[in-house]
Image (cartoon, rainbow, N blue to C red; front, side, top):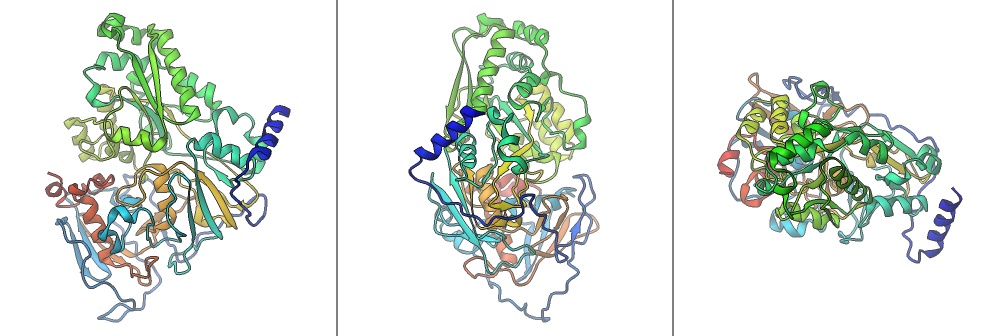
Length: 563
């Protein structure tokens, strides 16, 4: 510990440019902000729960028969192709018609891709990302300083149940957020760090005490075989590489048992994890050697190396090195190369389908459903499907709402190699209280109590609800935008926020949504039915290539916009 203390003192002496993080000190043990009475929760325990509910707020909204008390835009700000299943009834009410009943539709509405958008977005969507205008508890203070920081401050006109408890929140951006962000948290230049280097796990409890937090997470880490490389990596080779990996050894060596070795895609926080493990995703040296022999062994591999790709992250680099060693031990594959890139560059390479081997990834579903781990990542044509996996049988299983069957098909194809199911681990300093990270991997920034707080993140890839689907961008957008419904961070219950009421027809096909009165965007524009319908139409229009396009495929007319 003495050497670690000396290193920390050296860091303090060597830093010449310091970001001030002078928060308001509070109770060391933190405080829990209760859910207020005007945030009525309807329990949503699983994706299989029947959504035939009326989520009407018990608090009456004062309106006249003819005009809502808040003015609303009279016309749409979106002028291109539209979903036939979206229709504006009046300034605050719209209907959604689904192609077939979807038990998880209510949960989908909590995902950031369903957030409303102000009319200014449609004038220049690209420019909008540098200074997003939302309706959430925080608002931008200036513009996104790329690769440096993003600063947000409380929205004084926020109409939601829980106003921001921080004076300001600055997201400091790091190339290696895990290593540098954590080091800066140790030095108190960062107040909240959501990534702990594996090498620091034995010491984090001593370093941060009660500031070290852990919670359940619905996320998993994996390597995917890009479909355009399947001729180079045929089924037998994919099976051999997967079965050669000792996932439990990875978990024990790098995470000291704090995460779970993954033999499925759907993580253990869902009850479905109790199903039989996929044999292709279980450590089986004999099976790996047999599959490798069927492939043709080292002779078939020739001089072409196995190339493992990952983002710039010290822990993932160490895991890649361990995987390379395991492949050598089990299959005698000595030529395993490792490539890494800074996070946004790496994500762009995945999107552009130019990586040259199995690629590391992490996924945390935006809503509480097993399908949220399968459909976006592996559905044919999904904008989040960077590996290019495509299977008509898989797509049909998803359409049937059968996550278990879809996972069996994915297992047989070995398009992906799950490594471990994650857990939330984060640290905070005394400058901030009531820090918690929920099952979706979202920090409760709004409920935190403190002053001018600094948090560590990597550079976001995108920064607008239709196009952001990676953790860093969503992290920022979560505080800038509020959705129709949102999850309580601790109870996981789902309740109305921007919605005054959500009702569904008896057949589950038509949903009637009324926007609560009094909501405005940060620029003062009222949030209306058009704000949602315009945003959803733009995202669902295939010509816009929005990353969150796939989430709208249950709405009538999506096929016509994405033919």
